[in-house]
Image: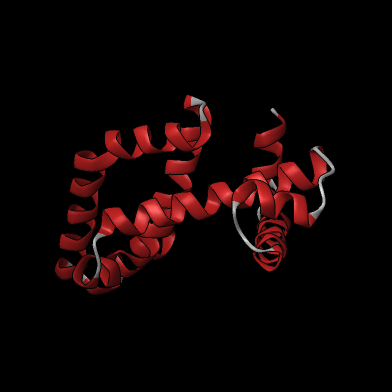
Amino acid sequence: MVSSKRSLQQSGTPVRLGVVEFEEFVQARGAALLRYGYVLTGNPDDAADLVQEALLKLGDTWRKVRNKDNPESYVRTIMTRQHVKRVVLVLRYYEDLSDQEIADILGISRGTVRSQASRALHTLRIRPALLERERA
């Protein structure tokens, strides 16, 4: 959320209102998002990580999302996509399943398996701390 802080310093009050709205959203919906994260991951620590990653992405786009979309729906979509990427990598590299086997398990196409794996690997390359956190 560095970009939010930077724009706060540059433009003043309107952005400050956006920051306050974002903080209020997190306070109001944080527990529900954690519950959803737990349903996706089955683990409270992984759920908290998933929510944190999704809220960071939401924070970067808050000004756009708050006016056009349902912010909670947006966060849940991010969380679901992140979880699918994680599951694809686990099934591919830890369980050594083929793309077709993964597609059958998740009910998605082989092409979607490949694209999700590619995106997840890209994320790990640019944010290696995520991989270290998974290993811990």
